[in-house]
Image 1 (cartoon, rainbow, N blue to C red):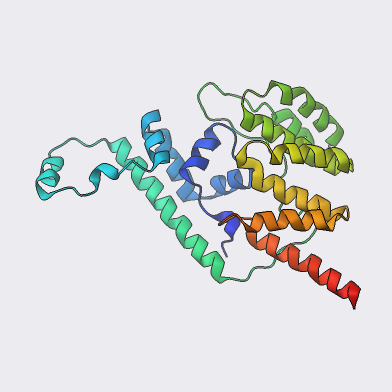
Image 2 (image 1 turned 90 degrees about the vertical axis):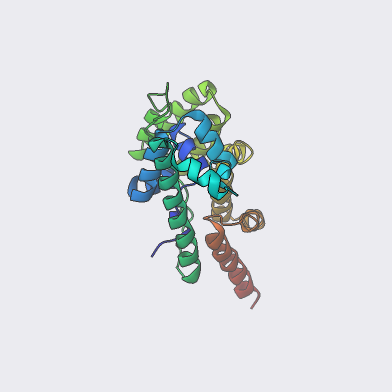
Length: 259
């Protein structure tokens, strides 16, 4: 059954993937989803102005209100195959995403409640945008993947100051926070995850969820509840149903203590 974390990527997320700024669970979805891969292939055929018009929502607006005479004239024009491939690929992906949102909302899935459940882990990423050939955090993420957390932290400390964009800097804070969490250094984990939460907006939801889970693990339940409730204010957040469940778990636990 599809879940809210499996909805197809937006145009903005597809572009972010090329810049290496897409979160881990979205990269995993992209790699597994035929529709998203087709949308990405279509997007890569487009030029920068076409990508910007897709982001602005103006890509197809010139067809609104076309008269019969204009339509007849338009048929005689030579159309750009790449442009229409972009449109077809992205519209197909977005249509599939809408179905998944509806389908997921009709079900009643269960969720894990362990502290690191659904927390995005450091992930070595393929960089596809022009001029970027390597993942600046690749070695650190690889060390994390083989449980070399101390080495991972050392590599993140070396790489973060060199981050060329706020998005990549935020990713570094997020992932080193998770690495500190795994070593049991909760204070530094909270510090770095908070930096990520206050950084580039693309990491706001992931870092809010991670912080909430960490606060819950360390017994700061009021802080955890506050963060879970922040996630409830974000429409269609993939963390929304999980945040609701965690609020219920904490409130039920408090109620049982009072009995």
